[in-house]
Amino acid sequence: WFACQRQLKGGDGGTLQIVGGGGGLFGRKVYAFDARSAMMAEHARREARGVADALHRGDLDDDEDAAEWERALPQITTALVDYAPSSPAMHASAHQQLLTYALRDALLRRVARNPELGLRTCWLLQDALLEGNEHAGAFGDGLFRACWAASQRSESCGESAAFVGALVRLSESLAKVDRTKRRQPERLWPLLSALNDWLAPRALRGGVAVPLLDASASRELRVLRLDVERCRVMPSRARAPTLLYCEALATGLAADDEDDEDDDLGNLNLDAEARRWARVVAPTEGPPFDVVDSFLDPRGRADYEAARRGELLRRVYKYGVWEDAEAAARAASPYGSNPGWRLASFLVKADDELRRENLAMQVVAALRRIFERHGVDAYIRPYGIVCCGARAGLVETMADCHSVSHVKSQLKSLDLEPDLATYFDLVYGPYDDRQPAGETNRKEASLNFARSLAGASLLCYALDVKDRHNENIMLDRAGRLVHIDFGYMLGRTPGGLNFEDAPFKLSEEYVRVLGGVGSDAWVAFSTAFTAGLHAIAAELHEVQTLLALFFGDGAFGADAARKLGDRFSDLDGDPRRTVAVATEMIRQAHGSERAKQYDWYQWRTNGIEP
Image (cartoon, rainbow, N blue to C red; front, side, top):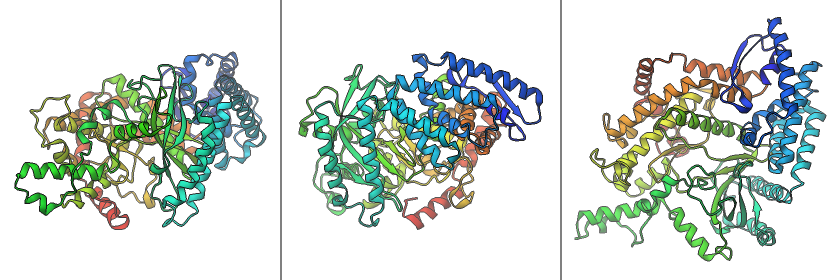
């Protein structure tokens, strides 16, 4: 569809190849468009008629295609706005209009069967129409009205839209308060209490659905009430991202089974591996730790180390581990006895560019599928992002996941070396290659770190992610790294300066966490990175297609797809060549001076621990 539209429009004066990744909406054909080729233009007209016929016949209306419609929804809404009949991209071409109306009709049939998909389409259209696409005019307005009408046929969607809209307005209003005062509880808590009053009668009917799970999923997460005293406004200069905790019900098929690794609801906020490490990092009760008194304690060095470890965990996990907080909330809740009750958490963001974050998570999910198909032992975790209108949305939080800067600041508060290796030594014990794998010991924590470091490094290299300071890198309780905040990627850099020149971040302290060069964890990292590089190169078309379609008719998407291909151009499918390229990349990244200087700059200007 996209390739035909670009060719019928006249291309961009050059050639772009689009290869569909997998079946379903993305097909398996290879397309190329070139403004100078009359033969290809005629081929595009024939192809356009075939695509339109397939959409009109409902070839992609099967239930098994529902998840892929949802996955491609950002690309579909962008394409419909860019190629609206009244847009500059359309030059009264009958074939172009045929394609546009065929895709619109297919989307509306899908929305009629799933009202929640209609609500999400409305939110994405609001965001797409905001970005200088006023030319969509009556077509965009009509599509929005049709999707909205379909969504409002469900009472649940109407309440969801009202609830999410209230949360977004709350975040917007707090952003207008002076930033020295907006984080005060008395600013936030009364507003949330008023929302709880609105939720109370609806909680008796099963709560209000929040769109944190896939619209095509058989399960729902329904909010019963907000845990007001746990909610807070996160630090930000210009915005007021609001962290919310709520009591919710998991409804749908097998609602009580929350440990399925392949289930979105079971992995919401915490996955199975993170749950396995709960008791390892759970803070223990004890008297306040004092360095002098504890060191002079006659019971010995071991007791001193245990007391210091306990104090470190209490400071890092200030609110305790998720399971303990959930158990306490359930015991105190009037709804706690309901089957499917659980604690849930998410961020509300307003006046923020969430589309790029959404694209990054689409790429993360694509890389994860590629790793699974090729058996790559690298860890990479997509977190849920739902666009809820123009520059607003909900973001899934990862429980008991703290920034590396936060961890280091707590180490400094105990007069310890602010180094991740020090944290791993204290919390998980000293590294020993002889420890058995698979248990909750230091070697397994370092192996988890190695797998996540490989996944994060591959993601950062593929998308050219920048601004990798320690507030944008999180550490979970299983010892895994998780990168967040993808505002600077695909050529965008802080201040327009390409200061971070390493392929990815691989500091000396990361190597110490791995147990040094040559350890089992180091070998696991380098092996996973090399295998992942080979797998991505083999299926690069899937990521390139995501980029090209996400940015619609503009040249940026095609340019991003080409640059991605350039970054993997040295790989020709020969495993030996891949090993050589991966080894050179690891050498360049290891202890990069530019990375050290960027961390130092962030520390001096923003107080982020290097």
